[in-house]
Length: 338
Ligand code: PEP
Ligand code: MN
Image (cartoon, rainbow, N blue to C red; front, side, top):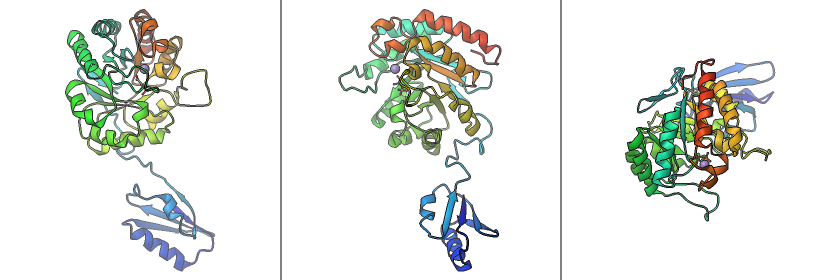
């Protein structure tokens, strides 16, 4: 962090500022220019609020140089993190992991049918919501614990590890026991109590980007999980709120290379919730692979017209297979193995 003092600040006032900073346990490198003096703060500035430093009337500007996220930062951890889920290694160079399944688990027949189908098309993990964060309290809220049991039955039948969303910190223990990857949905990206509890486990966590979260806010949420000791975080770009209303959300594909540069964590893309329309899922998925994502999470249903949730954005099983065939072909050109 750098503090720029106003021109003509007296030596006495600069000295007072230096003592104030040193009292916070930091060192100061002083650089006297012709007009202003610049103070470089040395040490851990993560707990310092730049606005508090601005309360000193002799301070002109304060600038952060280091990112506020340390454990998520590539600077301090240059090698990519690989999150192991069964045989699958999410984030491994050259691998592209596809997670697929319905928005919500509905019946045993439905989840097993979709699981078998997406597995045969090349998906490595099965998704399915048991606890659903719905905008309306009158919409289907998910089968809850019964949904977890059905997901387990689908895992038993197909061998696919299961990914499902958690909403309450009270259920962390149960999820750790039952599921392979715990999903934190966009609406809970800043549920800090939930993130802290998940940080105490060692389960892989799929952390979706909040509806209106900046990349920095998203990485700070990952930091909550990492800071508690759980290194197994997979980030997921799922579209953000913008002024555009044509799509359900705007898929921020630029977030993928940005996050890859800023962080060592794997990043996957959810084209289904971004687009909100099934016909857009394939082009967005292909684009996600080409911009460097480590994988996808895609909604697939055996009968989208009758889905209890998010049918309009769900691929049917044939569409998913056809998309996967294209992804495999294009993957050869961009060194991504499906
Ligand atoms: C989901 O994956 O079913 C979901 C609700 O996603 P998001 O949190 O991204 O809206
Ligand atoms: Mn959904």
